[in-house]
Length: 146
Image (tube, rainbow, N blue to C red):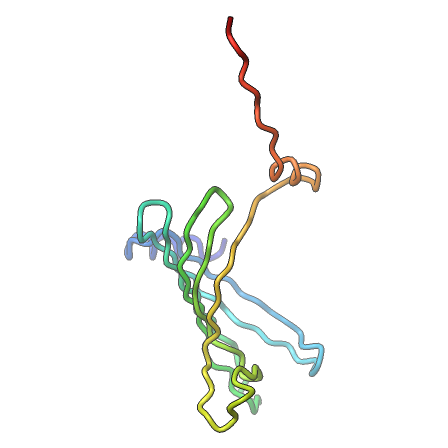
């Protein structure tokens, strides 16, 4: 909400469908340290209202006393809207530093990109009962005319 006036102007200037900025703060269970990052998300149409390209860039906050450097991360994907709240996704994102992607080839240069595909379902509901009603809608029967 703080950045909405700025992101609205960026959307208009670049002609994008959606621009958003979010901040995330996590506490590591292993080290007890806090990690913070800001994510810039961009979205625009490729084909009608069905196919969109998406890009999310994650900028980690780093203190000057940190020994380990956290690189900027990205996530780029295409989404195909099947219906309202249901879409297919295919994309790639940067892999975390501690992620062992190539376990069989330790001498080779490791691929630092995770490729993925999947289905995304989202809907809003006031209660769990309302959620099930939205998912499992009863079809209305047509009445026969004499």
